[in-house]
Image (tube, rainbow, N blue to C red; front, side, top):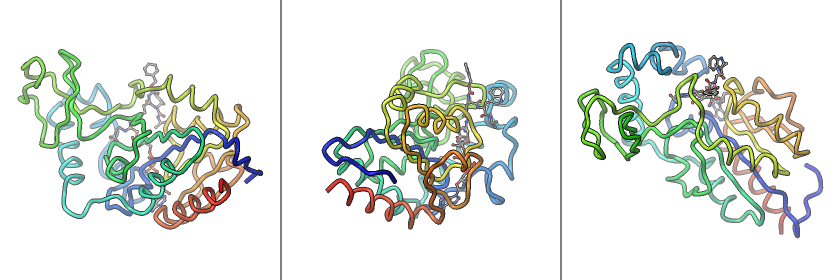
Length: 243
Ligand code: BV8
């Protein structure tokens, strides 16, 4: 990592993916035992799938929601290290996650964008209201806002839908001097393209993952291993350079 000016620390943007939640007990998508090995994207994670068979899509997210709310699912040292970094970083900080779990929040992260939505929220397609919802959803679920039925969906971004808060993310990438990608395979756009945007901003780019991602060659610094080990170690080294 290049010299770091502690009196003028770079703006920091962090991107996380499913790999950071793996050791908390949540499945990734593209590992051999991942979600897409068991179910097809076209059947459960597109607007067309929801229009074709809403109960099938609700069942897919209901099972994941129950899993997330189940006993034993908790933030791991990787999540906690990022919450500490947000607290102690002396410059601008933004954590962008592709994950729809709430483990970053439960670890204490607040400067956080869920670009692919949140599993514990539901959105009404009739009135656009978004509410926290921890139980199962179905076509019969009434909207807490307009009381309408049949319009409730998981508040997540499916393939072919625009991710959330893209302007805020683009602005942060334009300003960033340090971009760190953690636990993502670099398969899904626009998230997989953030590293190119960071390079255009002349940022130092770091990949922390179990194994090289699709975009590994774009990262000037790379550390591989389980997130619960390499993320706390990286955060400690980084914060030591700001003291
Ligand atoms: C968009 C839903 C444009 C929520 C997800 C045709 C039509 C439309 C768009 C496209 C198209 N063709 C391509 C596209 C673009 C498409 C895309 O990128 N497709 C890919 C497959 C090629 N993208 C989109 O559709 C996006 N929208 O482009 O809109 C637009 C423009 C104008 C107007 C309207 C629209 C929307 C993308 C979001 C889709 N939703 N999920 C949910 O169910 O969760 S994406 C899905 O993949 C998840 O959200 C996940 O977050 C995301 C990325 O996966 P990863 O997090 O990287 O997980 P993965 O398993 O892949 O990797 C895990 C990594 O962790 C691995 O590298 C592994 O080694 C590592 N790991 C494992 N264990 C550990 C570990 N690391 C550390 N420690 C460990 N212990």
